[in-house]
Amino acid sequence: MTYDQITEDTPNHHYKTELPNLIFELGLNVYDIAVYASLKYLSNDEGKCLYSRKFLIEKTGVSPSKLDETLKKLSKIKVGKNYLININERYDEFGGRIPNEIFIPTLNLGGVR
Image (tube, rainbow, N blue to C red; front, top):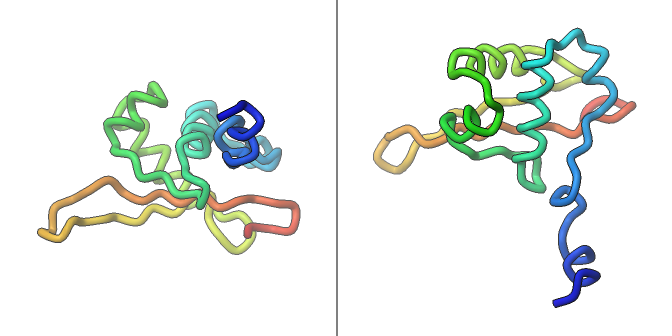
């Protein structure tokens, strides 16, 4: 497989992470922006991040309490008709907790799509 085939077959998301300019106009602190950027980076092509809390702590470099605080804050900031992130708790077939699904909608000038 050549480099050209890889770049054609792989979504752009795998090579760069873009943050909407709006993020810098919402009064977020550096932790908020770092966590939001990490979630965007770690999310799949559908905008879903399914990694464990432990993994997110390692990737963001913030403390467990700071991650929890920041996720809660980001999930309460409304942009257009939606929130910056949506957190859905998940459970396995036996009722045990599995990593949350964090959905990061794409922000655009016209609102959220």
